[in-house]
Every structure is written in structure tokens, then in C-alpha cells.
Image (tube, rainbow, N blue to C red; front, side, top):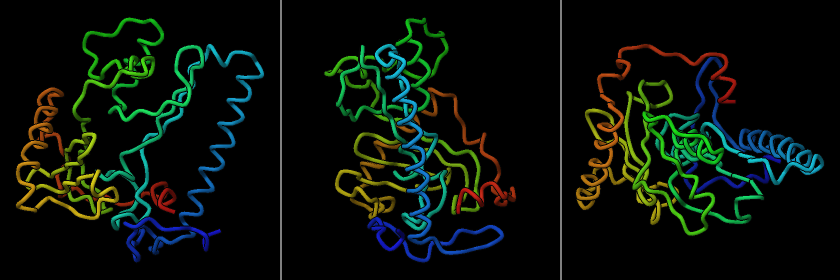
Amino acid sequence: PPEDIKLRPNFVPGTVVGGRHPHEIGPEHLAGYYAAITCIDDQVGRLMATLDELGIADDTLFIFTSDHGDMLGSNGYILKRKPHEESIKVPGIFRWPAAIRQGKTKDALFAWVDLMPTLLSLGGASLPGDVQGHDLSQVLLDPAADGPEQSVYLTQYMPYPTKVDAGWRGVRTKRYTYARYEDRVWVTYDNQEDPYQLHNLAEDPGAAGLRDELEGLMLDWMKKTEDSWDYNVPRTTVLHLSPVEEHEAL
């Protein structure tokens, strides 16, 4: 029930969803979001139960993940395309009883681009020479193994009418989040001390060294991936919420 919803500490009352029918996000929208999650949980349960019934669960690698999160009023934002935790973090559940230890949680940095080489390796296939992601199969198979990367790369190439002024780039380390537009730093967060990202250090003089360090990681990623600010869609491009995007917002 909406009246039982506990809002996150970084929820900003008055956050508006635009489109054809502007309205404020409230507990009723979160209740709808949780209802959708419950529906997915039910269907995932059916799939896993069927694997057990067929006797093939031990030989099946089952993965539960998603393509993005949703701000839902956190930090005053809606939808995705933000460097904040609610947007960039997704589920990462791997179940393979024959090979992966059960009940293990890891904080290794695992990006979408790592999924393909990891799956190829787990399946015994060779990796293409030009693959950009990392084979993180050992993170899944070895309880003591951790990922090799200091950070994962965050990218967005175009402005969007949900408070995204332009294309941006950034990094997420195990502790920090950093993102910038070409002409200015957007956010810098210490997720250990500030898990709800309430205190933006983007202009904090005391965090200048931290910003320089994270900027260096971001520039390394841009170089490794041959990325460029020139790939951004110009800010003068006019974008509007489509009916599909408006439906997502609801």
C-alpha cells in the first residue's frame, strides 16, 4: 500500500514527471514499481522451479540482471541516464550450483561490457582479440578472487529533458562516483560516507585531489575506449518524452 512506503532519505518531494500529463512522483508510484518487481520475482521463481523439476539446474548458469535502474524522485531526478546509484546499479545474481558457491556476495566492479567475455569463458569459448570487456569468470568461480579494475566507465552521449544538460562521462570506483560534462564537473560522491549521495563534492575545495584522481581514471577510460567529447549529440538538439518514455515514468 502506498501509505506503507518508506521514502529514501534522498527522495525530493515535488519531483515532477513531465510529458503530456506532468505530475509529482509520490508513494503511489513507488508502490507501482514494487508491484512490477514482485511480478518479476514471481516469474523468476517459476523459471528456477522449472529448472529444478527438469533436473538441469546444476548444469544451468542462471543470471538475473537489468539494463538500468530508475531514480524515482531520488536527488530530485526521474528515469535513468544519471550517474547516481539508483540509475547505474543493477542486480547481478549468478546461479550455477555445479560451479558457483552459493550464498556468496562480492563487491567486485562488474560492468555490462564484462558480461559477454565472462560468459564465453565460463562456456569454454575463446575470447575475440578486440573485446573491450574483461573476463571476470574467476570472480564467480573463486571465492577469493576479486575483479582487476579500479573503476567502471559511465557514459551518456546526449542531453535529455530529465535534467541531463548534455552528454557526460564518469567513473564508479568501489568507493566513489564521479561524473562530468565536457565543460564542468557534475557530481563527486563518497559513497562510503554518503551512501545516499546527499553531499556533492563537485565544488568542494577539500576534495580537489580526489576529483583529480577520479578525472584521471575517467580520462584513461576515454583513451582505452577511443571515446571523445566530439561524439556527443549537440545541446541544441530538441528532445521530447515519447509516449513510451512517459509510460516508463509512470
